[in-house]
Image 1 (spheres, rainbow, N blue to C red):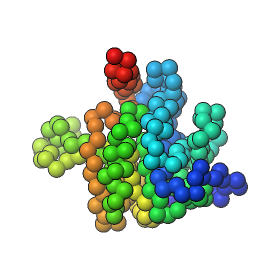
Image 2: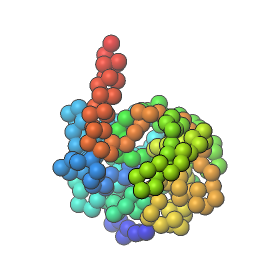
Image 3: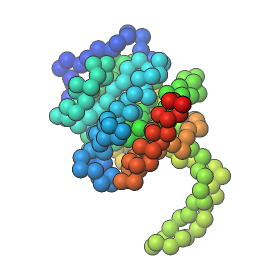
Length: 245
């Protein structure tokens, strides 16, 4: 796990009593998306995909600060908002970017017992209501938790391209984000798990902890493949139409 060098002039908090941070890892290349560049910067209804994500968090009053973790030298978001913290310490894996971003938050004045909500930049259909639901469900929890969606489909295991077995789905959930944990324990968990974990809950589980599952939505999917852009755009258009009627 990479630890970033100390920042020379880390930006300060908006408020000295901040308790909830949003951390958006935004350093991925998005190879599977088929896009010509990072998928989080591809246009969606006329603006970069990640701006839809950031807009949802900006509407949640409990969030004291939004921090975006980008690759060193990435200045795409530099002129978008003066209220954003841009952490230029993204790494080669999601876990490394999150870990480095958490260290950045501490350097910016966050406390180890502050909450952090880690959210995928490409989950652009998250809503303020869903973020608030997670905060309300986990703010009093000893561990923290994550948005997740109860598995609706029959689940198969595979061997050499053929079905090996049908798995019981009654206790299966699809992990989503945000995932909300205390900054200090999450740093410890990621440091012990290394950079192979694909979400924060996995790192916490490796410590023997049981994060809380908070029901999310099927619409809170991560834009990953080329067809996902059209689907996300359709959902956003439907929401706009609903607001205008």
